[in-house]
Length: 235
Image (tube, rainbow, N blue to C red; front, side, top):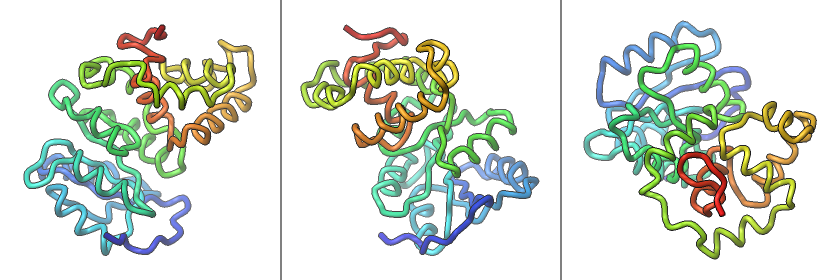
């Protein structure tokens, strides 16, 4: 699949809404339409329609529901994120019901939002994704991972420990704190570092482990056993 050619959209976010519930799409559209820096450029009722639209529509951020007919949000996210120049994907979840949200993160989503998220938080998340920053509060991601920890493989798989072994002791410390839900500012206070230094460490962690963002750091930390369900450090 080839996506529509990329064009500059600095400061302006093109959003696609993917949800089989028309009323929910309408509500999100109304919130986004009130923003001077956002446009809802496409809407889809399932993953198949979303992928078709992406071939001809330039999109920066996809708000993706999980449970939909024909193709669910997890499979759609996997296919979208596997392509070059892919838009960022935010999973929309009801949290209590969508046990596939973790799989969505594994599939390449940059994070997830609750469907009843306050408008200001939704808008902040979309802007963060568009600018390349963290998508959701790591602590929120951690709570999701804690809830669905039975879906994780057994900790301590050799390949995953080998990846973690690429990190310096300080980078490992920073990774552990990221996975436990601390922000860069909180990590700086804990380790008595500047926030800029912490940001540099996070960037190096992403590069060394070939990860896209903080969400993937959290996922790898859980999978490797560096962090256990409940947020504690692994053995």
